[in-house]
Image (cartoon, rainbow, N blue to C red; front, side, top):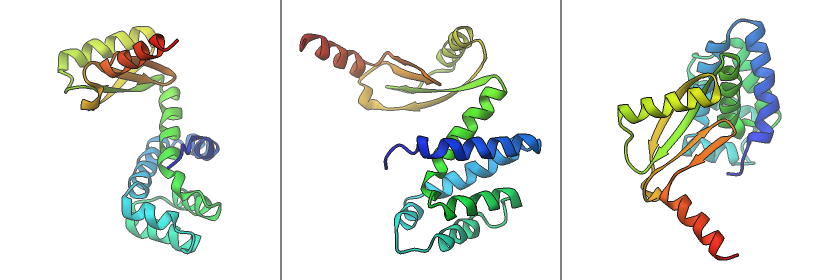
Length: 178
């Protein structure tokens, strides 16, 4: 699927402003996370992408799967997304919403993708360095990708630090081809 961020951004901003006005940021974040997880399921993605399935039926499907775990405002938001044909953007809407929430709370969630599992000591070292560099609280989301060949890639907002072997080889190849 293509990058849904441009589509998701205005919806996330509207949801964030509504949640903030009602002092319900955490509730909205939790409910949007649930919807994003549902929409990201392969079987559900297939249905959401099918133009033969009515938009109302798509929103009913998500509401049925969520089984009453959504507040009325979030249900209405879901119906609005369905009406505008934007249900496929739910994972990106949640990601944008979470980023707005984190910025408001003056914290950032940094993705750390490494060749092998990061130790607790390494996590602390990375978090401390990012906290110093970014000037806010840092939460790490660590994952493993053996295709990096070694090292790690760290993403925190607009900051990307590529210390992977694969990244170094790519930069070396680019420099040699000049």
